[in-house]
Image 1 (cartoon, rainbow, N blue to C red):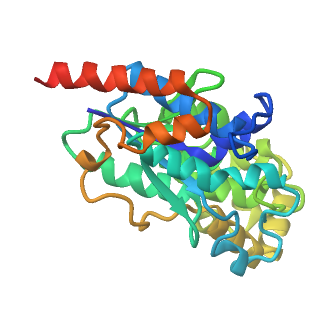
Image 2: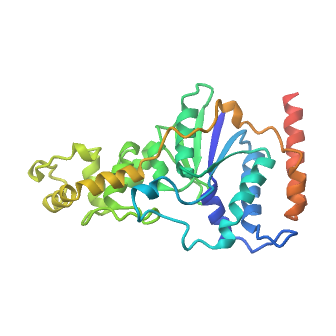
Length: 296
């Protein structure tokens, strides 16, 4: 089997800014929810059998306690934030496993699920559906890959190296020095993507970088300035790497069989009626009947 792991937070943001505003029968904004449900179900129609969706039930996480500047929900439209619990409930009603994160982030759930699924010999490939560069650290050969569904770009380990210039295991170190504006930490002065790629392709982790800049590989330009920046800001570099390192111990599923799609719950029709989406309910019902016939 293949396992598809979906970044529900990214999908909800993407659809919120891409689809027209739509209210349900109670006047609640649900345009993005309908968009994500349709998008996820289209994957099932195209053959996805085992799916998990991770969401940021609240934007804040344990990382906000580590670094005050880490991303928060400030500035996120209320009409978007209000759709998170609706999406989570609607996906579950559609029969899809959902991990709503509170203490951790959606990325941590995706990383944990990918790590666990990849250890199961029954799994042919794990596909992490998100363009988020953080998840590049989870890619393993061609077994665990990253899919940007919007751009239709599938990235295996060679693809991560081609994009960032470093292997997946070095992505947290890479983000530590270049920073991650989306997550709210700045990186180190003087470090750009080229310098980070050149350095970390030679020295995979920060601890591997020689403290004497004269021992650095000759391909690395401005070694002295980069060295001074790194070692003068060493505690910041370690903090930023910690922020960028995804957790692998989030409780997600007991067995990959838990991720199998077995059709909607009885209350899914009520959700579709509330969202004025009778066509989606009909499609899901037809697909479930088709799957049931094949299994017979």
